[in-house]
Image (cartoon, rainbow, N blue to C red; front, side, top):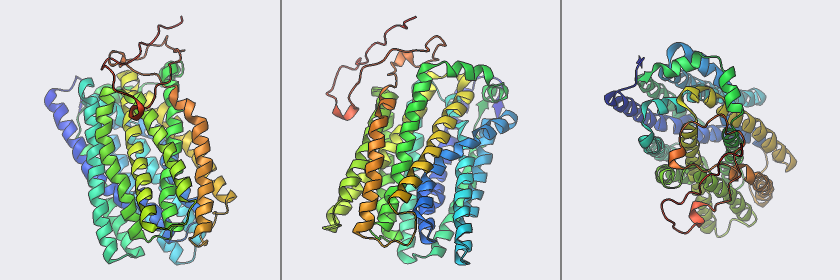
Length: 473
């Protein structure tokens, strides 16, 4: 329901509760239709590596559909808009599964096109919904409780996704077939539509709908002149590009490098989801203690570390296998935690530096830039590397030759991450009293000194932030 007044405490409580219910059901739904199942299905129907790695970029390329979400929100409000697109996203998941039919008929090109087209629709509908997710969270929470609620929301999602993954592993233990994957996708789609219903029950003020109706030109000009916001965009592009180049390919290496079955790959992938649960709690604590900027820096260094670790792992024969599995679990765990931490940190940072009336246009700019730009770059980079190393087909056998090819892939990715590190380090640290609207005159903030990541700093006094110098103007 939309109110033309601030929400009461009871209305905020009901809204947060419905958001948490949505995240619980959506967590179980996503693990049945999301990236892992998409990759397993694409590998099973023999899609080329270049197509499989492109699935990770579709998550971000889908942000091109953000303006569509704003248009719908201007008519029905943020909550109902998000609920509608969440339901449509699960319809796209069902259409994605039709690729198995085309592959069974020998129409492999059509199957690959279906995989790319409906994965884009799946993530595009998500993007049209989440353009309003940050403003909606800001609308139903108070500043002092925001970091905790963002962390709890993510924790519920990943907790139920982990439970769902355990159930999937149990099912694959009994029936590891293509038909089983299709049943899992159908189940997840139904759960996803149910979760969308709870989004429509969230209360909101008319600020979001009115903001969606306003012309964007004036707000975009203000945001464009905002140096701190621009730095956030650059940092998000670097973080998202790292995630999309690394995390989906980890599962691909397990499948086509080590020759693991769907069951074993799913068990290994469980480490990412367990790490995400831990990461959500860590993000809530670190966001309050250190601020979201250091969380993003730590997450980026962690993702770079994963790339370097995989380079080492793929340089040796998988023997002893138990030791290799142990280090792969570490890589998956660190990657999953880093993604969770940086996603929560971006939301926290955005909500603290952008005024409520500018959150919808700011969200459109942020997600379009960090999503579309990173998505396009991700597809170009990953596909180019796969073709260069000779992994543009789906027929190569697992073994050392395949592992050495993937080693080259991750070595190139690690080099690109190192080169892009300054984009993340230049983020402005935020003091608690600074977490309000960034003023228009702060167009050229001073450089801030480099601060080591949280994990590599000795304890200091709680008032450890370095005062930000006054504006040069």
